[in-house]
Length: 116
Length: 301
Image 1 (tube, rainbow over the protein chains, first blue to last red):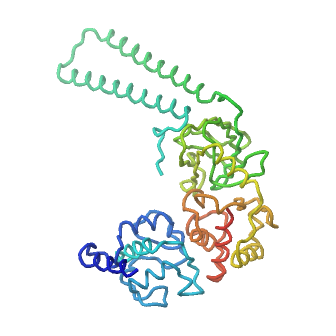
Image 2 (cartoon, each protein chain N blue to C red; image 1 turned 45 degrees about the vertical axis):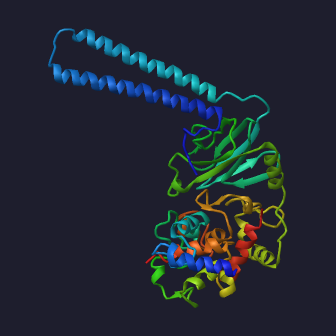
Image 3 (cartoon, rainbow over the protein chains, first blue to last red; image 1 turned 60 degrees about the vertical axis):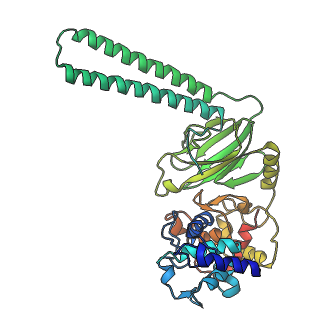
């Protein structure tokens, strides 16, 4: 775990592209995951083909939004935790645990921060 | 997922692709000859002599090329609609507004928007509609065939290559015609037999407390008036049979992947995803209730 964290920190220092705000997250991989799991069933997602779901909030401008789900400050590590298990942070949320791996959640978070 | 009539997975589709290429090259040659003659006319100027002979040659060549293509396409048509060797697997597909109901007669298996076929065995797919005209088209497997109300058309394919093939409605049938897709999965015969046996069974018992709560909410909300879930008191015939919805690749007729998230989103507001579909938005559930229903549905494998 410590080694992984160290690797992620290194990646953030010199490896990650400037637009990625999430250690170990690749926005383009995240975009593909968003399309593959069908986030559009509930959310309007700019830049991803599919329907414009109106169950959860539209994700336009997510990178400028102050809060996640209206309950937590919008910080990269918090967003990753949210994506991994939303009901653990907000028991009343309609958003289920989608079974993302930690790596996948990091990619998706990196993609969401490109929506400005 | 590639959808191309040139990526063929059956002998029938291969014949059609061959015809397509033949027509492509013949038309290309005709186009080149016409352009060359036009260029010669523009550069060489008017030559009054020999006009009648030129008309005769032009008419004769055109008639010969068209007759050749007509005979070839008739022969290909006869070949693709001929019965295959061996005992065919019979399947019924009903075109609905705007999804596909799939039945495997004699087994009790009913599903939606997904057809599975064993590789190597001929399949006879009866195409039926009780509403408007649809057209059943899986470019990788066969040509398109109309689904006409009051008449059953028979499509014959013998899948040779394993894989997942996308199909779609190819006849304008209403506002959501463009979102009326499905998938065909060609599997090894043993895997197919196992899959079909599971599809014929009643729904699985809820795996945990959350799923049990989801099932109870489903029944209490009257979902069974439109949907069938074999094994519990839900036998509606308006929407898709959900007995094994958790085993499918897609929902909403091939437009979203099937998982706990998309199932919940569909239940809560399918009208935003596919406006005009027959299911109202069930937007009165709490978040926790919606997750329970979605979890139960996703567990119906």
